[in-house]
Each structure stands twice: as C-alpha cells, then as structure tokens.
Length: 602
Image (cartoon, rainbow, N blue to C red; front, side, top):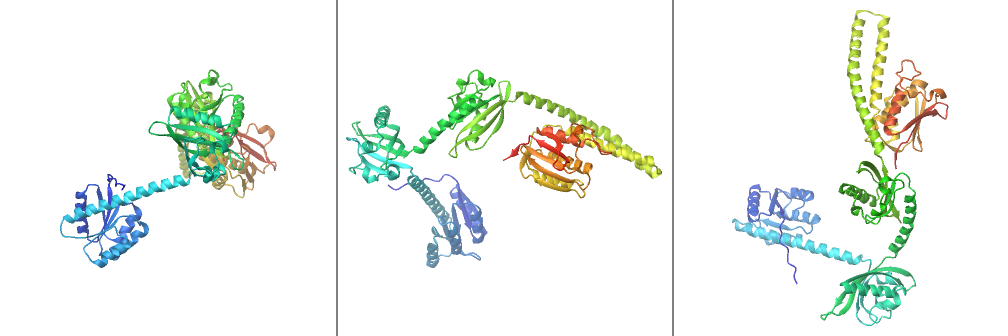
C-alpha cells in the first residue's frame, strides 16, 4: 500500500532568487494569489540567497538561471552542499537541453521555463506544492523509521510468542536473549532443547508466576508478573514480564505474546532503599524541634516524624503513605509549593522555601536522597520560623524608623554645617586667625560624625538579598580604595560566601582602615578563612583584654579626632547578615577580628 501524502496546512516559505526585481515581484504576487499558504521572499542573487538560507528555514527555493556572478546552477550546487534535500526549482527563460542536463546533474527538484502568460504560475504553484509535500512526507517517514530502528536497537530485553500447548513452547524469541538468559534464541525456540518454564524459572516462583498470569488474563487481555530465573550459567536474575493473550475466533486462548526484561539491579536497589528508609526513619523519629518528611519518587510520604513539631503531633497518620496532593489538610497552594520543590530535589538540587500554614510560617529545606548515584527520594525538613519572622518584621520597622532618622540627620544637620563651612570661608577672606583653624577642625569632625552616624543608622538593616561573593577579590578591591601607605596585605581566602556585596565592602574597608589608623602606615594586614567565616588580623600592639568588650561601642576610639563609629558599623553590618564579630589576639600579638556564622557557597 502506497502511503498518502498529508495535505499541507501551515505556511509554505518560498525563497525566490532573481536579479530582475520587477519580474520577481510579479511572480511572487501571482504565486501568493494562487495559494494563500505561500509566503514568498525575494533576493536578487545567489550569494544573498545562500546567506538567507544560512539564517532561516525555507520550504522551497525558486531560482533564475542567468544572474550576475553566480548563475542558477552554481547557486543550486552551493545549496546542495548544505541542504541536500531542500526542494529547488529552476525557473528560467533560458531553455536548453544543456541547462536542463546540468540542473538535473546538480540535483534540481524541478525545471520550468518562464513564459509570457499567467498560466505558468498555476503550474509553478502546483510544482511547489508537490515538491514540498513530497519532501515533508519523506522527512516524516525517515523520522518514523529512525525512531523505530532506535527503539528496536535499544530494546533492553526480549520479545516472545509461545503457543497454547503442553509446556507452552516458544515459537519466537528475539532481542537480548543470550545476555538475559545465557541461552541462544535457537535453544529456547521450538524444539531447541530448553523449556522456558521448567528449565529457566526459579523453582520457588513457578506456581505463583503462572497463577498470576491466569488470574490477570481472566480479568483482561494483559498481564504483568515479576519472577526469578536461573541462567544457563547458574546465576539468579529478577525478570519483569508484560504480555497479552492471543485468542482464536472461538474465544479460546491460542498464544501468549510479551516482553521480558532484567530488573535485577532495580530489585537490589529496592532492597538497599529499604535499609536506607530504616536509617532515615530512625533519624526522623529522633529529630528535635522540627519535622522530617521522607518523600519518594512518586511524591508519596514514606516517613514523617514530628519530633515536638506541633502541626504533626496530632495526626501524622493522614500523611504517611499518601501523596502530597492527597493530604486533605494541605491547601492547594501548599501542595503546589511542595510538589515544585520536590521536583527540583528529584533533579538533584537542594531547595529552601518559606510557606504559611494555618497561622504559622514554616521553612522547608530539601536534600536529595541518592542510591548508587541516582536520586530516588527527597528529605524535607520543616521548622517553625514564625517567631523569627516576627522578630525580623520588628527589625524592619526599626530600620524604617532609623531611615527616617537618617534622613532628618542628613538634611537638618548637614544644612547648618554647610552654612558654617561657607561662613568660615568668608571669615578667612576677611581675617587670619587661629580661632578659624580650630573652628574648621571642629567642623570637619562634626561632618565626619554625621557621615558615620548615617552609616551606623543604615547598616543596621537585615540583609534580605545576599549573593555569592568571592572573598579574595573583594578584599583586594577594598585595600585599593583605602589610604594604606606602605602597608602590606596577605590574603589566604579564595572561597565564595553569601553576602550583601556593598555592605561587606564597607565592613572590610572599616577593618582595614582601623588597622592602618591604630598601627600605622607600615602595618601588615592578613585576611584568612575560618571554619564558618573569616578573620582580619594585623601585627600591631593588639587590644588589651579589658577593651575587647567595648571596641564595638559607638564613639569608642583610641585615635585622636577619630569618630569612634568605624567598628560599631562593622558590628551592625555583621549583625544584619546574621554573623557574629569578635576581637582576639592575632598570631603576631596584634588585633584579630573574627567574623563567624558565614554561609559559604560550595
């Protein structure tokens, strides 16, 4: 039977190549009138035609023969290099056997002479449709054939047909027969000597396997069974079989047809998974102050433990054994959130989300569970963060008040200071007095106090948009932006951490500036990594033990004319990130500021 070509319904893109624009425009108009599916684009040369084909896809090319530079045959040869099957119609006024012969040799799809009447365009339109339909049909057939060949070539098992006779002999066996059983297909087929049931099925599984096949055939036409076989070499393997009954006209079972594949590795993974589930269950049952959910690849809850977690203390039984969408007390929005993060977890990613539940807020963190390198399930760990969120909201309100305060300071205090600065300039123009020098020094200190006070007010905000930041490059940037004189910098920290980049820079700049101000321009500053953070140390005289508790207080300073807000700002920035900052003695006896509680990117 000859396959029928499916009619084309989508637009047909035609590239028309002709150096006579008026003729090409007329031809395009006639073609689009003949069939509204045609979308004709005109270019004046083969060179531009090749460029358009490189950029976009077309269904058919129509080309003149005589054109400046590259003629139609040369253009066709260039097209065939990159598009060997693309329909190409030579539409030319130069009709000769030589041109036609060259065109056919070059692989032209069709050859039509230009004529002086409109009827030629109906013929041309018909030739285009036939060529495009044939090309698309060949492409579809080739795709189908390729998929079928790929399927057969990658079949991970064997197919069979056996007759309804004593011992159910195999008529046909194909596929990976020897790899699965150790026997050749010929040994199993017909009278090859190997009886599939008696010689291959594990003795403990024969009766149960056949009883399952009969029961499922009684209920329908298909069956699925799992059983063990003994291979020719004596190895035990697990098999999964899916088959169907083939019935005669009188309704009697005539044969069985089916597919058999090796699931030994899957069975082993299931057994290992059962052991892992036992370990996870022990972990979950002893997990304090939260809940642990073990969610399998089918989105079912296998293990749920409250561990003092109020929402689960009442009835975790309505969750275990159910899929996420089957838990009645979960809202539709919560189900969508959990399913989304679990999909990501099964793809191998850890996720973190915050979700409202009843009148509380919970943080859910996930981690993939792997067996032999494959993700088979996910752990969901939930914590009640309602009180933490309430504290953060209160901090946010405080931040807003601080922002208002900062605006007042910035406007209402800077204005009079600016006036004083201007008056000092006028006064110096009228007289020279040591009093003006002292006044200018006090003014500069006042302006520095305003700047640091504004920084202190603004840096107390909670960090909400942290990003990965490489520590070493940002330390080097800060070093370059601070007046360090002949000081030396040593950095031994190349990890990435999560932080607000601009605020981390201010923290580092203040610590570097503090070392230079308190030790001198020849100080050596060292930055290195801690287990959960980093440190900034110097080789100066250090900070006496009694002062180590007060150095972060606003206004504290041992340097004349220093505002004393630098380390207070460091403390505020660290606190905004959720970090801790402490001061201790460095290896050389100087000051060492340690910032801990930092989250590193792995």
